[in-house]
Length: 123
Image 1: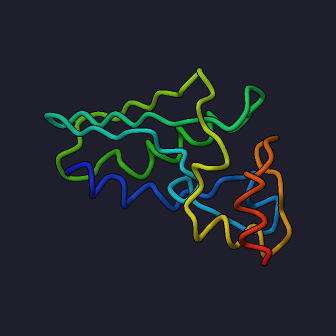
Image 2: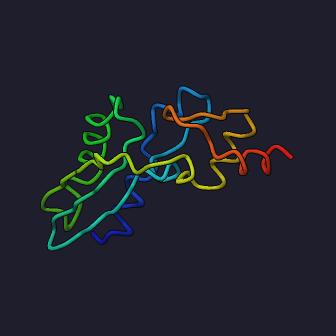
């Protein structure tokens, strides 16, 4: 399995925070996949978390492991989390941000959506 195939298998894992808004987004659309590396059967996925209080790390880890473990060419799966909280709402895919704006959602993961983008979308 290569990195592109692995990303395709995990990108639609639902983000519970977006589910709560009524605009379900996958971790790919949310911009939570920081990096993905496939080397000699070892898959390493590094994820952003949206807030220091994120309770979903174990859920993300379990879902990623379930979707990748046992796939051809995958010997092991390792999930790491960005503890520096580098994720911002600006990391959300533009189409997903537009869907959030259509529902008038201005905050996600405890962070405000960028104002200039919100004005453009609402116009």
